[in-house]
Length: 171
Image (cartoon, rainbow, N blue to C red; front, side, top):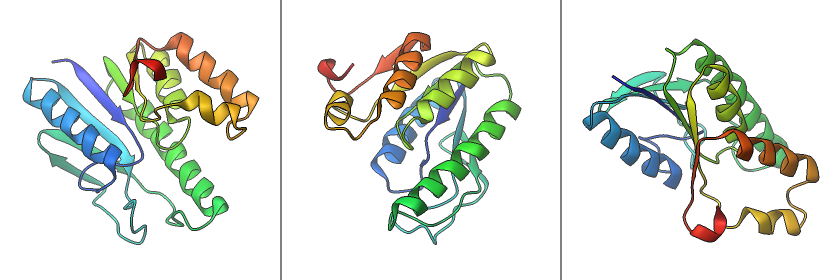
C-alpha cells in the first residue's frame, strides 16, 4: 500500500481553506487505498486558543498534530514563533514517520514546502508542492519575499517531482 504524507500547518477539523482542501485530497487518497498521514499543528487557524487532539483519524487519514505555540496572527513575532514551533515539530514527525512514497507539501507556513521537499528526498520519497499562492512572483517583485527566500524556492523547484497550482501562470 503506497504511503503518502500530507504536510501543512492546518488540516481538518480546522476551518482554514487549505485544511479543507487537503482533507478532501487525503480522504480521496485513503478511499483509493493509500496509507495517508497528515502532519499539521494542534491549533485552530481562527482561534489559536482552541486545540485539536494530538492524533485522530478522519476519513481514513491518520492525523498527527504537532504541539505548537498559540500566539496567532496578532503580531509578526507571534506568527513567526507559531511557524517555527510547527516547523520544528513537523521535522521530527517527518523523520520518525514510516517511510513515505510521496510527500505533498502545501504553502502554510511559508517555506514549509522546503521542509517537505528536503526531508522527502532525504527519505527517498517523491515530492509534490501544492501551491496555494496564485502569483508568488508578485510577492518577490513587491519586496515581500527576499532574495534568499527566492533562492531557497528555486532549490525546492529543482528537487520536487511535481508542482500543483491554481492556474498555469503560477507554476
